[in-house]
Amino acid sequence: MKFDDTFVHLIHVKKGFDNRIRDLASQVLMAARRISQDKTAGYVYVKQIEEAVKRGAKSKSPFMQKMATQVFNPRGLKTVFEKKLNKNICFCLAFADTAGAARSLKRNVELFKSNIAKYSILELRKEIRSMGFDFKIIQLNTK
Image (cartoon, rainbow, N blue to C red):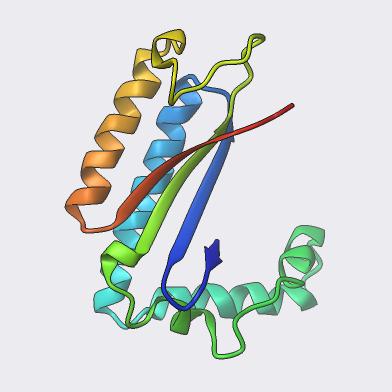
């Protein structure tokens, strides 16, 4: 997650451009639905997540302890979302391409052979936009 006073970017990342993109698209859509529902509930869920992560400092789990080291907005994670229009909340699908040859989804979509992945992205974009959120695709450079 990256945010400032105007925008919130929720970035979901996977490696590869294949059926894993379908899984990632599903995760992004679930997150968008959760944020949409939570917005009407006063961001109760977001607040619960923040509290659970902070409690992780006392956990026996190394993962939860590491999660607890994150720095949260001093006013609380809930305030990051409050008063933001849906269009100012952007769900980002980011992927690191694992193909041997360099290719760009932006310039050479035909080089990406996975129709499942392409279809999943198109459907995700449609769903996210119908909720009023912004949507971006980010191709990460792995070189």
